[in-house]
Length: 129
Image (cartoon, rainbow, N blue to C red; front, side, top):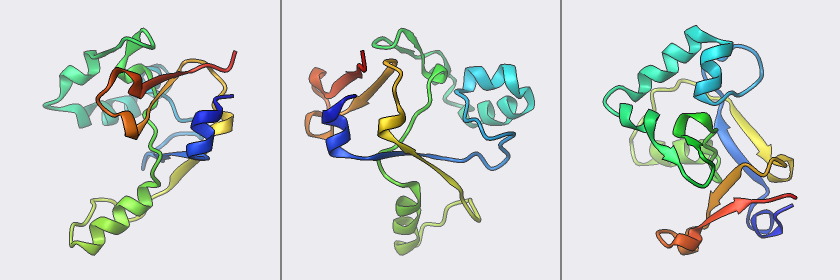
């Protein structure tokens, strides 16, 4: 396990999609094959930002939409702060996946360390081998 990452945080978060089919959270490119209608709904969020769908992630040798993007910050905390300053989200209620960092065993994971943001060393490859 990556003890450096696990010493910083214990969970990663992701919004549960509002119209999610099943309980598995798929990267966008996999969703296309499992639940095509849901894929079309989610890919529409990239209107005007279509270039992201072709962006390569060199450390993982894949595309932006081949991976799950997780947050170290519980999204509910972000929404609560928005509410405090008068900015409302377009979500009436939310569900959140709370994923233990220790459960991310695949070595195909990278993370950014905030203290080194912008430096090449800020990207670390998760390596459990």
